[in-house]
Amino acid sequence: MVKIFIGYDPRETVAYYVMCHSIITRASEPVSITPLSLDNLGKLMTRERNPLQSTDFSFSRFLTPFLCDFEGWSIFMDCDMLVLDDIAKLWALRDERYAVQVVKHEHQPKESVKFLNAPQTPYQKKNWSSVILFNNAKCKALNPDYVNSASGLELHQFKWLGDDSLIGEIPHRWNHLVDYDSKSNDVSNAHFTLGGPYFNEFTDCEYSREWFEERDRMLHADQRQK
Image (cartoon, rainbow, N blue to C red):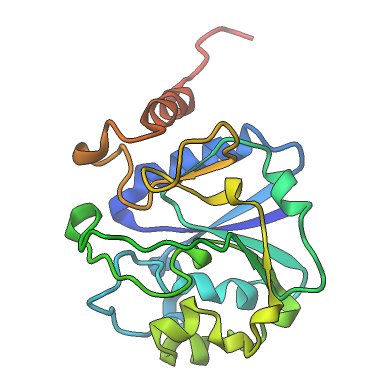
């Protein structure tokens, strides 16, 4: 079973469901998908919203290992993505040498705002935490008390590991930054980090056609009698 947790923000509800569809329809193995919605996390997520926080799941993502009882492996992904490949291929990259595995972007955004006027904050290891393969047993520092009290940089820069050698790397195609990264024919996951085609100002962004096609397939209902 491929265990997937996806960040959920009510402002991007359609993005969440289209992403789920893109995963399910391409997966060659059973998947379980859990939305990380603040409404469902109750007392586990108590920290006040940070003015620099652009989504509801900026910090809740780090509860993923705890929600797995620090056992086995899990995948966290932002919801503003479109999976174009079999998620089992990402799952197959698990490496016991590491606590987490990520795409190690060198992302230095030039703009100061992104979707819905959310602040764009530059920092080292930016977007590394948008797709994470968690080796849950090696992430026991991420208990609710720590996740609710640690700074954003401590969390997103993986300082809780204490050793960057525990951060493994996965191929870039699993976190392609739309309209930042160079165009490629080898993209397994398109990440609309600036804003997805479900927002009016981004309807013509890279991979918008693929996103609308995925949405239309998701909305299809077969009316034929069986």
